[in-house]
Length: 112
Image (cartoon, rainbow, N blue to C red; front, side, top):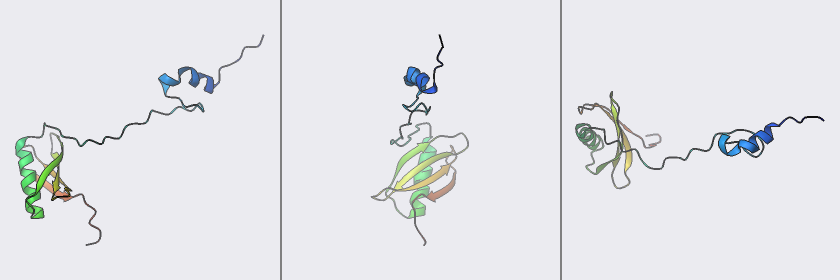
C-alpha cells in the first residue's frame, strides 16, 4: 500500500489557525491593526512639555497650541503640538530638562 505525503496545503489547513496560513497554502503573518490613537507617553516630563508648547507658539506666532502626541526618550523626547483650530501638527524635539533642540512643521506647505 502506498503512503501519501502531506502537501503544503494540507499542512496549512491542519494548522492554519495557529500558523496564519491562507487557503492557498501560503503562510502570511496576520495583518497588524493600524494604531489610530496618538501616543501620549506620560513619561515626558512637564518641563519638556511646557518648553515645546512655548517654542511652537513662538515659532508660529500663535498661542492656540495643544499637545497631540508625546513620546519619551532618554536622549530627546518628541512632542507633537497642534496649532490653531485645525491643530496643524508641529514636531518638537526636547531634552527632558526642557531644552528645545528642534521645532519643525509636519504640514505639507508646498512650494513657498
